[in-house]
Length: 306
Image (cartoon, rainbow, N blue to C red; front, side, top):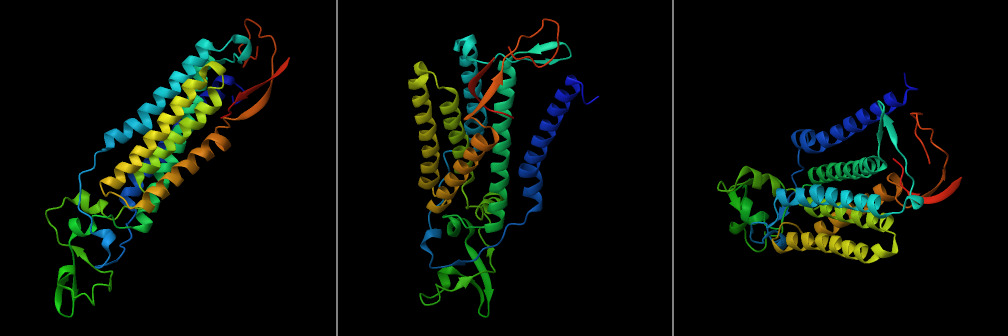
């Protein structure tokens, strides 16, 4: 049964779906419920934790648009341009056959590149969740939102009651005394490193930059490619500046998020997606009624495997 092309293709689709579902489920559902955030202490004299709380401009809806909807639309647009504008002799016209139906190469290429992108995004979310919970770094607005208090020999104390001499002591066991803050905000106050918004956006934009460089190689597309890459870099930078200007993250959190996103995007584009790999493809005549993977001598073409 495994020798049947229909069975192989269907098995591949099922495995891909289950793999994506498992990684996203672990990153978005299982780990947030099972992982305990490390409770990091603080110094009352630490000025980096005394910034005022500001409502962020970006929400989860904006992040979803930036890392899911926008990349998917751009990937589909680029593949449509290639399918419509690249000459037939310059591109491999490969078609998969499934239960007698020939699948155009446009669909298979979109499936492969979007699958690689989504898998890399899931890995990014997984690393972000594990790192945030294991480090427990306090956000810049920690003092204002939490108003920490702790028990000592003198009773219940606050940072405001300590003398200048004792303000540098390290407080590790504390509780938040600001009951006006929501539970969601109090849980976010210890998830500063790395910046999840910056890491996710940097991954998405860096992947699109690599993809545009690999796929938009025609001369008449160079201006469009450069404009697209510049816009992606500007969007990633804009998100980073927003997290700093609203005091959501420290500058080191933003730098770590950018490095994480760029590193994972490079890994997925170069070593998993093989966007810049040149392979030797054998062309042969495809019999009209033969339902096999058809390739229509030898020539080099940039491609990516999956």
